[in-house]
Image (cartoon, rainbow, N blue to C red; front, side):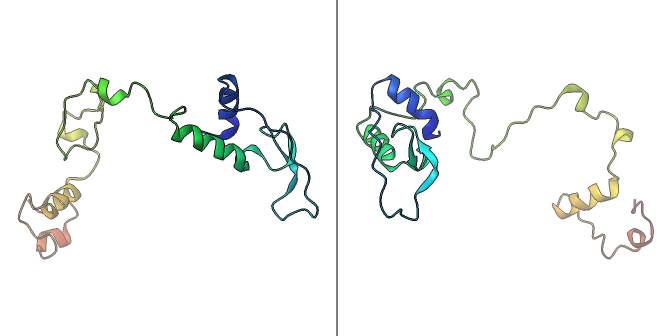
Length: 142
């Protein structure tokens, strides 16, 4: 959350008060930006609200005192209707009915690369690298 988005709610809840504009330092430090203004310092020039260290300190104090939290009061995880899964499940994908391939002739990927991948996964024991038929026939061997 950006500090610019957070400041209005902090002000509305009376958790912070706007500060008086600081005096302009002489000579100007390297970090001073006259083109930026800070809403926490009543739009004083020199920095923007995202780089306002006094505001960051105030927010940190509110977090430590537990007056300000960024946690969801009712986590969605506790309301999750899915049953508990083992450590192997890391994704759930929805597949629409029209995405199912019921006929082998509708498969767009050639069967030889699929067979090679299945052999690499040790589902079959066939070495396509030394097979004489696979070397000359693009459809592979029987």
